[in-house]
Amino acid sequence: MTVVPTVTLKSGEKIPVIGLGTWLSKPGEVAQALKIALKNGYRHIDCAHAYMNQDEIGQVLEEVIAQGSVKREELFITSKIWNTFHSYEKAKEGVDIILQQLKLKYIDLLLIHWPMGYQEGGEIFPRTADGNHMHYSDADYLDTWKALEEAVQAGKVKTIGLSNFNSQQIQRVIDHSHIQPAMLQIESHPYFQQTKLINFCKEKGIEVTAYSPLGNMATPFRKEGQANLLEDPVILEIAKHHNKSPAQVIIHWSIQRGVIVIPKSTSEHRLKENFDVFDFELSKDEMAKMAGIDRNWRILDLTARDGDHPHFPFNIEF
Image (cartoon, rainbow, N blue to C red; front, top):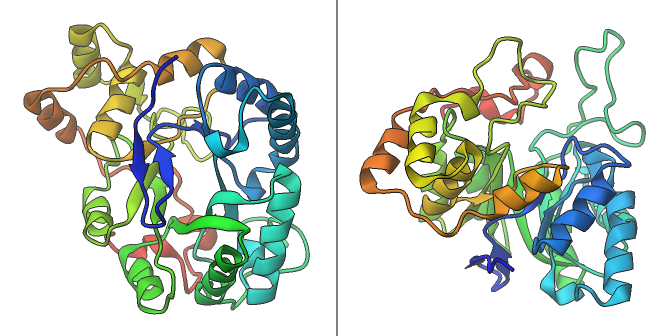
C-alpha cells in the first residue's frame, strides 16, 4: 500500500499530503467512494457541513472503525463550519452538529468555510426572493474563531484553520487569536496557482490545502466552453515524459510545491490513480513550465452572489 507523506501542522498534528475531497459527491455515491478510498490507503478525508453528505460519511467511519479495519487515530478528518453558524453560540452548536453527523468524538481539523456570515436559524442557503443572493448576517468571523478555539480547549477539535479567506482576513484572525490558524484551504490548480497567497501563508507558518486541484469539471460554477486543465498541452507533454496521466502530474506538482491536495472522485480507477503520485519528480524546467500556464482563473467565483458582503474575500488581489 502507498505510504503517503505527511506535513506537521502548528498544532503538532500530522496531515497526509493527499486526501479525498467529498464536495459534490452525491448521497449514495459518497459512501462507496469513501469505502474504496479507505481500502486503497486514503486516511485524510475532507468534509463540510454544507456538502450535506456528512451523515453518510459518518456511517462509513463508524462502521470501519468498529470493524477494526481502520483505527480512528490513523484517520485525519477535516470539516468546516458553515456560513449560517458564524455567531459565537451558533458556531459552538455547529461544532456539535458536525461531530454528531460524522459520529466522531473529535475532528482533526475544523475550518471556517468562508469569511461571510449568512442569516442564521433557517436554511443552509438562505436565498433572497429572486434566488440570486443570500440573506446575510452581521456576525464577525472573529466570534466564530473564538468558538473554534474553545472547541480545541474542550477536546472536540485538534487543529483549527480557515478556508477561502484573503491575506488581510487571515492577518486579522492571527492578530486577534489565542490559537493561530494552522491551515488555509483555497481553490488552487495550474490555471489558478495563488502563489502570492500561498507564500503569505508559508511566511506565517500556515499550511495550504488546494480544493478543486484538477480544475473541477463537475462544478456548477463552471461556464460552458471553459478550458479543461487535463487537456493542457504543457501538462500532456510532462505526463507523456513521465508515463503518468495529466491528473497525476497535476497532483504531484501541487504536492511538490508544498500544497496539500484533496481531489474528489467516486471512481475506483481514478481514486487509485490519484494516489499513485509518489514515484516521480518534476524537474526545475518542468516546474517552471507549470508556473508559466497560470491564467489567474478562479472557477469558484461567488462575486455575483456574495460580492457585496462586507467580508467577501475576493475583492482584493490575494
